[in-house]
Image (cartoon, rainbow, N blue to C red):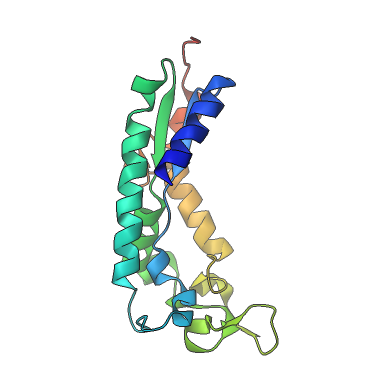
Length: 174
């Protein structure tokens, strides 16, 4: 997968991209859909899956750090979605969450067995209090917090600079 991302970056650089942002995967082992996997834990995140995601994300960040070397005149920014979501999960009430494990829309364990929109699904009363909208996707509130962290946040959200700084950079054309 890293090779595919490398090829994509090479291609978009060739057609003129000079500000390149690559977003990490989020903590896939924490999504409510993990309830569909045999032997996956329900009361905690699926550590084995998150370990694979972290390894992949480490490769992505390394790839982004190499962009200025591989592509003269370009700058790469790594959007640390995984880190941002884990930060939200670590202090849920600080960000207005009452539930960071289950889906607002769905049913079954974690709201992850009956998908939103399928027969038998339910919708929570307060979507803003949930990290996950459905078995895999964040709520609008979660997306807003992630976007804010990537746009104006510190290095824990975007590295080496945030997206607001990236948009204001003047890059020399090569």
